[in-house]
Image 1 (cartoon, rainbow, N blue to C red):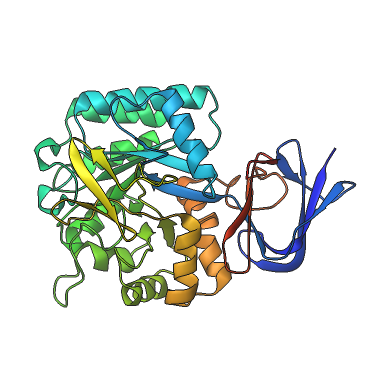
Image 2: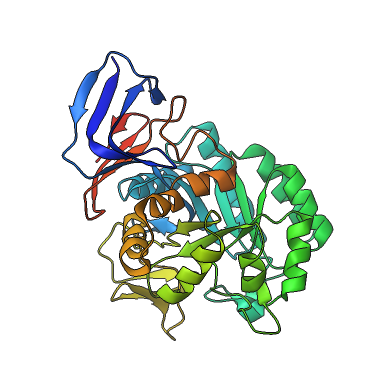
Length: 371
């Protein structure tokens, strides 16, 4: 039997619809018709939130020993935090670790692990000058073997995002990845705006955690930030008030009203009360909503997408339909997924219920309530 959900303001992926409703049957959103009715207690009904940069959760980090069960656990933890679709993310590691995570991801896709959308490989082909919390000793140029492995992964996974720096990859390598189906993203780079624009022309379509670990906007050298804000690439953004100031976020969203989407860059501590954990043998401290190495370097974020949306609405001052799109439709568009980030007939019945204060009240995955 179909179920109709009503009683909340509906965000369909583009517009807010007061007193809107959706009808769900067999795990998808369907056209209006006979249905049992569930009346929600106000607030907002949104498509399931999408997070394209998730390093871990539930005490687990994505690493060389990650198994299919680990990916399932991370996906389940994140779903209960509101993100019904994620890209588990491996940061810079050894070649064998990258190969192992790809193998686990392919197995997770074949097993149809709920919420698993593919993988994000953030490194190791970066610029050590902008390493952030990545291990500089593991950063290296892309080889022919690396390229072949990544192109095969792009074929085998539902989605593959690869963060690279122009200092470590060539334009032909970028083009090959794009042709293979990967979403190529620039990040952890000190490149000039001209070099970034060349990478965009070669096939880059995204920028990883805009403003962080990259060349900044200057009056004579615009850097990657300037190239991103005047280009057409999608831009992920960590909206916690720690990684990027509200004023900078306002500039970015004014320049790219349809190009910026929210990411959490969250780590193993997500969904737990842990005050510290390990990252590649290094101690990560969790203090006052901040994750850092012992020397104070930011190491991911202590953030959920509902929290990020609240920051965008309250501190940045964006209208709610724009805020909601940044966690639903825009990341879906970045992946080329028309079945996600929308609540329209034919879309997957992944959705969340938020209170008037944007607190998370309920989560449904394929039409089944999990929170």
